[in-house]
Image (cartoon, rainbow, N blue to C red; front, side):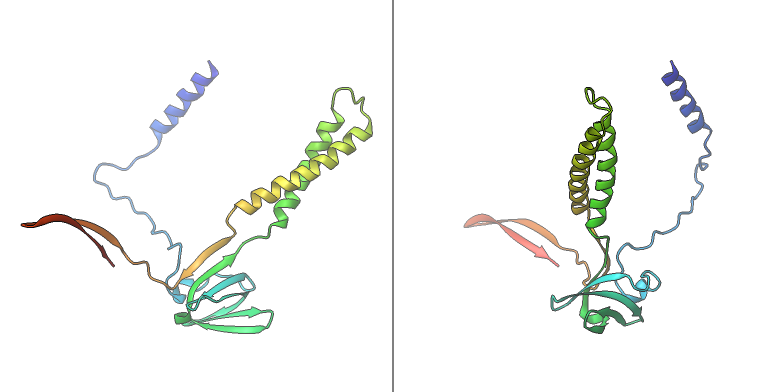
Length: 190
């Protein structure tokens, strides 16, 4: 009965929500483009010292920390010193995410806590500390492996800038019929 009452209450709340009148224009904010196409679009989007991966138009990948940005140049600090990239030479700019070890640490902590609880409350253990210790060790190892695996499967680099313009490509298949035969033509437009 309580589920029916909750569902009925939810329906009443939804029915009382205001909705725009017919013909009324509802203003929405334009979302910021997820991937910048110019360095000007990146202004203020990158924190100082943030780890970046720059891929040049030649296919060279350079990793470093963000130092600065102006209208046409990007400055990063690498292990070899400062580097400068012109906008025309950058194919991709990615913000590097977190490292894998933090997933392992989170999993280790959660697994150790869970393993200790399960081990110490195991039937037949009688509250002995050895059962909790075994649970702690087994849970920590299993949790670390699970945390590492989950963190490895998650994307870690966010694409901030793409210097290559996305081109519209279209494939077309056209029938060819003539006096001496028939066929098809495959055409790709850029």
